[in-house]
Length: 225
Image (cartoon, rainbow, N blue to C red; front, side, top):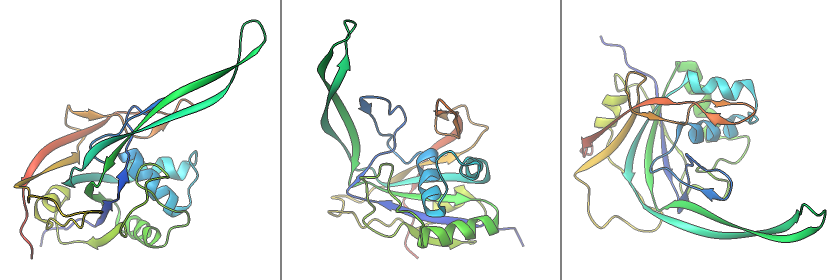
């Protein structure tokens, strides 16, 4: 009998989500799908790990991630102004206004699948269902509109098979999609691929993220049942 992987299924749905890739200073962008750094941060909140903890950093190598876009949502921008005082070369203070653009995914839905050692996956599963700190979808203002935990499964041999066979399910935050998609966009962590994403474990103190190999492909819409 073939060995089956132990997989943790997460459904990330919300009115707003934001998964920054180049989010620095006054422009805060969002990727089109959850980043590994964002998902690991969410798990860290559930487990009660602090941002600079060794335990949080170790999660990046202990977990392999896949994402399927159930509904891409739309990108929306929130316009901010921040006021404060700056010192001039003459030693005086002057009022200064910073314009900040913050981007979000509105009404998007994602299936995130994590693979790892069975006991580790089970402990993360328990934490996601009873988190120590509140979990959120990329930014603290982005609250899930449904429970993130979808289930544990050993029905599939690997992440790619799970992406292809798990039924499509979307209970959108505001409305049902106007049309049912024919295919779904997927991203699978794979160090053999030349395609990379800068969302692996951060390098302190700069908090620049390492590159992570990723395979991008589309799958036919799985049938229910």
